[in-house]
Image (cartoon, rainbow, N blue to C red; front, side, top):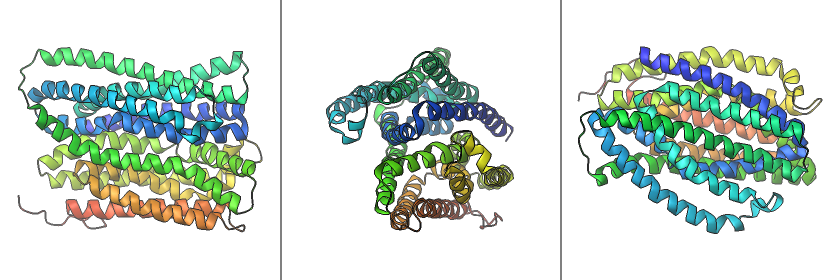
Length: 442
């Protein structure tokens, strides 16, 4: 348990610093892009994240599960086959993306170079995923923490430097913001690959056993494909969400420009504030996946039950006070971005979304570690469908508008959390109040 909490604490500290910097990054973007530019920037990000999800093939999760569950002598052979798989997959994705991206209508309102920036991201994300997954499996969380912090500090430095000395049109300013994003990922990739090379050299000096390539690919893809499907679903729905919200708001009587600005306030201000404490939940997710995978492989129900109780208590302890602070100090927090905007009321209405979102990440880590990726995927589909339906129906009403959209978001997040929780409790044999039931005989 000490290793688990030390890893979580290290990641949480680094992530806190990173999220603090991310907060400043969004402030810089808000000041330089304005409300409309912020809306355009936030609208294209989900498309970029969609490409990132596809490029990674969720190798960090599948490799970390493999490393946690297998002896060290098999790691070298696994990494060799994982690298070959990644090279083939990256070439395929690059080829398909080069054909499709020029015809994607989303990019019509952006600089022509934006779509080509995304092509650069594909190999960068693919190869850094191998190193990230290996370090996660070994629970070398210091390297993951450094890479996460490096991503934020480099992006902020580049943005401040460029925007301070140069002035651009709105179109070019958005392009510059996206360029810094790609440059940051490239630097993080180089760092991870360098540390991975040092670790791999050390690994080659130890006893090794070969594994058949087909076995490795089967083990990795059994986790990667459904997890990628789940992440892909999230990425696609996140890419659709901005347009769904804007269509609903226009249907409710707002002009297209006003709807775009309102979405910019929601995504660029309210969600930026509310997602700030999510770094703790994400840190728990990274450490929980290999920990739960190892315990599940050993049929250690007692450890999984105890760990779930601890994780739930931790999330309650930090989640409730933070959400209360967001609710009561919404106005001064949102004024840091834009003064006298509607974003403060959005932050207050979104408190259930922010609170339950903190529980989703560790519960999802449990589902992945327990091999219940299909269940997690189905939960996401059901909750998203209900959420989107309510967002559109309520958001289209002139009396609700953005308030209706937020009610739909809250409903979807609460539903997703409860479905995850019920499934995990049933699988590890605890009641909903985390009381132990008798574990099945092995």
